[in-house]
Length: 464
Image (cartoon, rainbow, N blue to C red; front, top):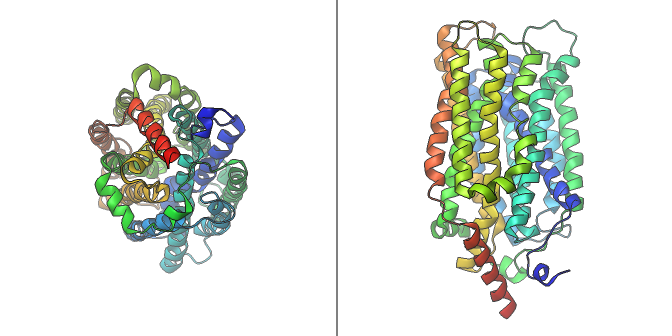
């Protein structure tokens, strides 16, 4: 091991990078399924009213705002035998898998109580994996370049999960049903079988992630004993870069939540598309990651961190405008829809993917200011804000569907309903991305500055 590595700037093997990234792939097999298809499942298969679903999603996300700081303080305060952060991939992975599957079971339909219990349990358990997994990132190394590579691998694999869900789920549902169908099949058994497969594969990947991650940059046990939930609010008020990325998370996840939830409605109703065409459209939401995420380290070196955000957020907005224009044509071409979706997704994937590389930076900044490396608390804070974005999205999408009188019983909708769906896919997400561009302009931690901060922290700890 080199001298540099002994001071926290560790280099990781490709197996370790892929192992860490497999955790995000696993989580996205559940997360992306709920984002893209759970609203559709509840309204069109399970039989719930869109307004009831909106309220339920809001209740679940508000519960998580309370739950996140508790989880963050808990994982910072304790050090399980299997690892401070990675242990939860095993401990919580099994019940999370079970409740994710139960969310797509139609046995008690249309019981709102059953939907509430399974959905909220699933979201609370997801947080109990997502927060320590996010903290795990910052425990592997302090090296900024290494974290950029690690984040690129992570988001590449996360989008593998997005592709498997967006493109694969409609095809698997169609495969498992014998029913004649127009658009996305509505056979409850096929949905349940498909989710069982996805969640089970996700559990195996969580175990693989656990096996490949080695935590080497964590707080001392003496510091951990003093962690309190109130540290969350102290960190928020004293860590300005954290506040910037927190508000960026709100806008980014609101944009993704709204756009993803509306995708199935857009292809089914606006485009009169088939399950195969929905598969291609949703798959193109993740496909650009295979081209651009491996290039992120090089792009960042060429144009800089902020400029990379500006460029790709602008590309996403252009793609959304193009998609809106194509959908308003007399006879819209699916080929042009696919091109617009690819352009939009290219911008979204790079910008929202790289934002996760900023989290270890604000953790180090907080450690530099306060002397505490409270990675769990910081990830709980980012979790609160991305759930705030998800809450906004989960309220807006069903509320607009209800406002424009979307009818789940028919494929052909009124012009007002089609326009409402189009606003969910294009207009509202584009407006949120403009806001995101302004927010990220306030971020002040350059690579040189964060490298200097990390070196000073290591020097300080070495002196002690």
